[in-house]
Image 1 (cartoon, rainbow, N blue to C red):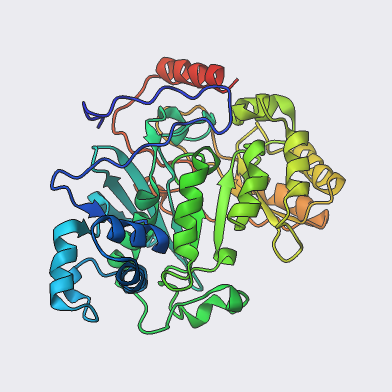
Image 2 (cartoon, helix red, strand yellow):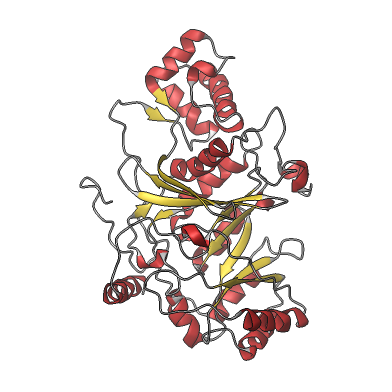
Length: 420
């Protein structure tokens, strides 16, 4: 629900990146929330609060370990700090978590949390357990900049960007809820051992091993905050999640893709969903600004792409829209044309209230997948997860109000005009 103190952010303008960053709302008690801060930022906060340089450097290292490696929120439990220091910290700082409004568990084990920020904004995250991994789907914005017509989140206005603390907080909260903070060095997976099998860290598949920036929002329209949050998540002295286990999804914000490779360096997923201008203009209207050929060239130029780290193309299967044999053959042609190290995730469309689209039949999905496979490109069909709690791909939407089709269309037109 929108708070009176936080008016709707204006719909973005024609420049990239578009949304205005949101300053952290000061706490009423005056304390500073350390969640999402890097070690240099923690050190700076300690110095500003009165510690000398040497003490701030030591305490920031200790705090970083307790916050992100142990998941501790209580300064009194940080036993390698002297008691007077614990009290001093508790007077000036806090280690926050997002407020949980609602937590749901699907019949297939998928979990969804509706979260609320200090300024009254709602957003969602989803955890998907598998036999050999546990994947957390993280949101980057309240609402969404874009207006993809098949996506429930796209029917929301963009309210604001999430802060680094709110992004990292989702990871911390998931670890809390799963009760799976690592013991000792268990769970650490830094770049030195990136190629190790995830099963050694999660033999039962429940440990949070992977992150996908595929929740609410377009991550590359909140680039700085996403970058800073993921750097905290990847830091070897904290959560220590390997960059190979993090995937950032974009609808094709081309001006930011090279920066994402250089400054974050995680895996890239691209929401493609169509192979012709006409259909992609409808499904992913950002295509009117950055076309398919331009997008695929940016993928070919993505520095981190290789046969070992293929670009993933997300392709939602919509009946009689983008699922023909001709579409499949054109997809193969395009990927070959740009010599892309790629795989294609075929996603059965997940329905939501108010949509006119229908999911392709299982037979059509299999036929499409076979053509792409025969073209030498991996095209697995993603099993829908969490549909019964509206947690599946394209279904996330924090607001509970229902919009008419006329309202959805009007908002989409406003967004498109702003995007240019």
